[in-house]
Image (cartoon, rainbow, N blue to C red; front, side):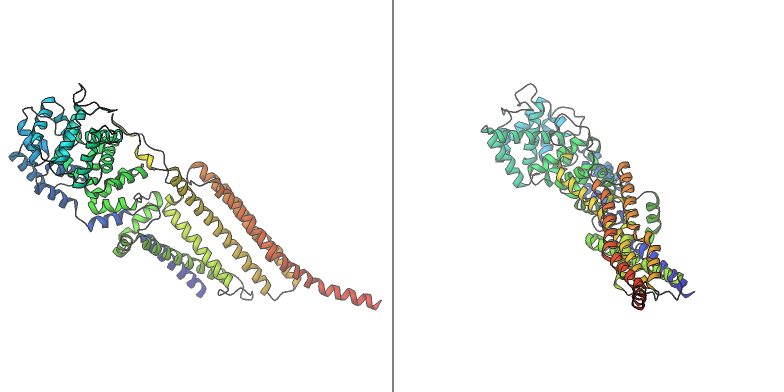
Length: 564
């Protein structure tokens, strides 16, 4: 009865520890939704960001953020309508800007588009804007105006050409942003220097200016001026401007979400890299993070991992226990992801130890008290328990996070593009070397699992040999006991072959993305460990027993020979 209670207690304790480990929101190849939500809660809220834009009369940015996040209360909507009634031009400009408003006063064209570029395509509008710049004292603006009729363009035409309206509109938009002080001084100077070199017919500078204009066209044809100016403020180098344009070209149906993510993160390169490395899940994960605010978006992009979305039975279990998660678990993981992983591993490892002790207690209570067993403090028994615990950790972890057995490499999606699409797509950042590294990680994990399983079987067999050796029985009877355990000693081979067959099936159906080396290694480990057990341990011990069993018979034979 005591043994039953002890086993039951250890099993219950193992379950509690396993549940505690699962409550730690730390995953190897993903981030937990609770941690993303906590990161958002510790920063400005979405509503605060909308109010920040509304109070500055930045109607365009406020409406885009509200559209992307689905957050806007009645007071915000009423305030936006009030601003539009007092300033009808805000529906076109997206908000106040002195230089753009001066341009609107010079224009007589009836505007229907809020986007910047369509407003500047008519020749009369470009003439009005260039006249406005005639009195500018900004050297960078003057440098841009000098390359309106630049020759040597490969994809666009100069302003004097019949088809030169897009190029001229892009140049004037850049000049307008620089004149308004929306670009950072360093970037504005970089653009001015490029324009100066391009005017001197420097081929590299001409190409760079053309790329810059194409990026401006991609952004300006989608955004109002105030929204475009807010993106110019977060660009630190020309590459940031080009990356933002590439994002807009790749996903024209998600302009509001991309704009809001750029505003929240203030890091175009991080968003670009995240969408490139997580093409299958990035949009859904980004939408979820956007609803939680800037802190959530920043944390998600810095993690460079998808959001964990468990399905089927694991999802049901995690959803059921989620209300009992201590806030401290999410806080630890948010502060230090590695510490969260260590805490989760420790709890699952202790759960595995408790399970191993429960199985040992149940086994000891099932055999006769007269049978001598190996002490649970024996080093081999302790090693067996540790290895069983590792198997439990790997089993639970891979069951609740099957993504650890998947390579992150995926086929690139051919998203819609426009005529100014760059040669390199988002997915081009995914190098074959990185994909191979990820595949090797999965392979090593599978190899570790097979190796530990074989170590557990090896430990069991050594413990069984030790138990037989401790029995107060004759050598002949011990030999018979060893023969009876022959299937146990060959169990490593059976498990190795079974692991190979199972691995090949899982690889074939796409559940596990590992190399075939991992599958065949299961059989290899089985052969090696079984050979090691029989050659290094079983054969010498059995040889000693045979000699011991044959010694009395040899003595009797010698006595008979002497008597004769």
